[in-house]
Image (cartoon, rainbow, N blue to C red; front, top):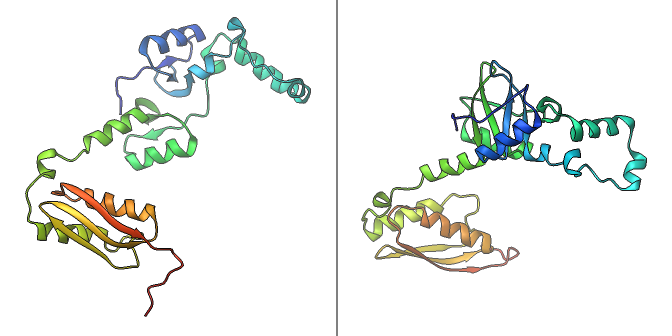
Length: 227
């Protein structure tokens, strides 16, 4: 996570927030009080529909006809308010410091957000963005030297066979793994291109594999193996 946090104070104006977002080159930031408690998030999307820019919502005549007084009042506040507290998104999705990468990805996907503030005892201690998750992915990139470690073809064949056996997508028809000088050849029949690609990826992830050649042919799902 990022601990050098860019945040906006609850007392700031929308102009302060716009200046901070531009200066820090971020698209959104948590809104906190003087003690550091998270109260919301303000984003570029919250600041672009403004009366000053003549970019307020342009609803159709039908939209205006169906609009309630409460809807009109909320829109007026969003386009005219000077305080960040009036335009920020209040329903903030947060996570604790011990959340796993899986937890964070699940929150981002479920709530369709781009970043998750990390809180401890109610106080903002960091933020995890989708870019941070990409950084985590890069940190797990296999070491080149380890991946290229020499191994004999028989051991490599056994490792590739083990990698594909028992998978939920494994072919119900016979498949064969042949290895020559670190190059894996996959032969046999599979149910479709998705399964073919899964075989390739499984083989590519075995340390020591130099290249994978696919000779797998597609067999219609309706065709049985017979007895």
